[in-house]
Image (cartoon, rainbow, N blue to C red; front, side, top):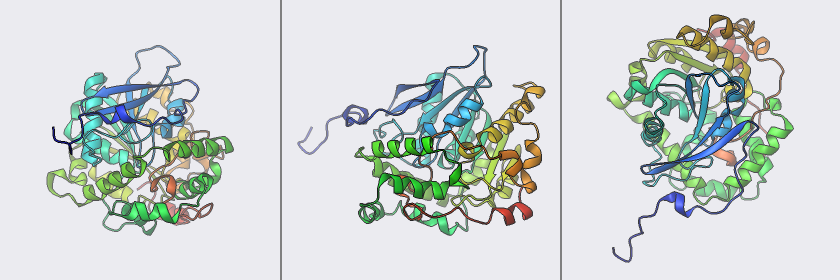
Length: 389
């Protein structure tokens, strides 16, 4: 080995000492070593010990397995759920090869499912995680028994203006520039900016969840690879948008065999609500849930509604009794689609982690100023014209 070569040491072996990741009541974390990558997996001890069908949740850019805590609680006793921290996010160290592409993340998920021998699973993904889950479902149908996508990051020809800064994060030098510009921002300001971009109504986040998000951001900012993981993953999404042929995400969506549930928010500032129709046409066995008042992270804003739709999907594929499918869901079907999400998604505040999402991370690269910004106000008009179509 020459003096300029680095020794062969995995990224997991050189991590700095930072505060531990929060583990919610009833949750547990474990670290799984795989070829070229180490993943942290969050799970819940099931309320009952039946032989429950397995589920795996995949978060979006800047997020972590904590983004699924609320939904995992709602589905306790329905599935044996696990949420993975993608390489470089949450409590997972960077991949050894530095590959943060959509394909690289999908490869990590596949390696975990192969090693865990839990497949086929009910695969659930949000935004970047939705793109990853789509690719996994297309190339390894044997691992997926159903697919649920919440605001999946699938290519758009006409990207929303509010999503442009997140895409720009992947350009060389932008992350460093943004870091300098926002150097004086407090963690609280950054988190408010992210929530304003990701939530249809940031007021639904409880004070406790907001404080937890601030603490998680402060932890992440101590990680020397945080911005590198954000930048390279953002670049990976942009690159995936440009791929054509059989590797294009829309082409792969057409290849998905698993029953698919699509969930779109009318106030999503990062994934266009108008893409719901294209997605419903592209996935061969699709059903669509439209939430006109939801933003980019419906599973965090309205976990009870998302859980109800998921239970109904399980009933359709024969893994849940029909009566149970509507337990706790009830009249929610009347509150989705063109009628708006008010009836279905109630006024209950989100108790889940308000952690970062597909927003350029805790820096608020989506363009929301510190402490300010409101979600897009187009929800009502979209609901009247396209929701549920």
